[in-house]
Amino acid sequence: MDEAVLRGLVPRVLGALVRRGADFAAAEDAVQESLVEAVRTWPASPPRDPAGWLVAVAWRRFLDATRADAARRRREAEVAAEPPLGPVTGGDDTLWLYFLCAHPSLTPASAVALTLRALGGLTTRQVAQAYLVPEATMAQRISRAKRTVADVRLDRPGDVATVLRVLYLVFNEGYSGDVDLAAEAIRLTRQLAEAVEHPEVSGLLALMLLHHARRAARTTPDGALVPLAEQDRTRWDTDLIREGVDILQAALARDRLGEYQAQAAIAALHADAPTAQDTDWVQVVEWYDELVRLTDSPVARLNRAVAVGEADGPHAGLAALAGLDPSLPRHDAVAAHLTERAGDVERAARLYEAAARAAPNLAERDHLTRQAARLNAARRP
Image (tube, rainbow, N blue to C red; front, side, top):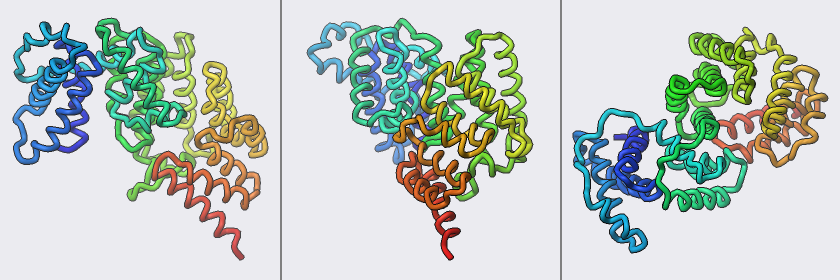
């Protein structure tokens, strides 16, 4: 069984342990130990029921750890009555676990970080990148979150806004990062949309569908990144676009605008344009103005500078970029694009080189390196 399949079983196994009385932090440790054991033994002796095998091993690991911990001896009476370890039911506890990780005892930021690490399959480094903080800082935040929930019962689920934030970050990492989680994030957001009447849930689902519709055109067969302006739009999934636009329009009609609806509106404008040149950049800027008003996000301001550059020219875009922190991720890449359009090829090449060095993944680094090489070659006599 490959790593992706194992990763997909984690929420079911973790949910089974939590439902049987394991606290979240200890359950997560036990599940990780069971995965290590699976990698070691399954190639020679694969089980008939992989999920049931993982639950049985993880539960035994949890019991061993609980009994060995003197500080938790008060739990021994409860865990000694071990329930039968038969096959795991086909139920899906994943969304339930997302809500439990958004526990009221945690701050929203800590709840998101813990969930991304424990359920989203992201590494601490990837979670840190999503939050624009150093990896060591994020590791401490996740450790504190685990300690906070270690001694509380996870029976008070958190709020929808925190769960939406987690799903949004999981999708973003799955869409552009090293681990493919985009489809799983869409599946869970669909479940949430069916269970909760909330315009921002609809907005997030629309945003995901509109971005996912472009998935096939985002890279070449050899994995090279294809910028939005250069994508073959005939490869976009028109059914997903249509569904995303319909969901977005229904959400906007409720007149409770939120950040995910604003982002989905921007994505819909890109999807509606038959060519990059036909994009209604003036409307895109207006929606970014709404997004900045709602979030005051530096990332939204960075993307707004790109849109301003398209709508009003590269010098206007550079002016919009001037007030932003140069250490912001992808700042150099945006500056390089706008500087090239403004005609300063030499400086643009240097900015592309700097952006490549700071790129968060291999595909983006290679793309930026090629951009720098293209401009350097054009400057040679």
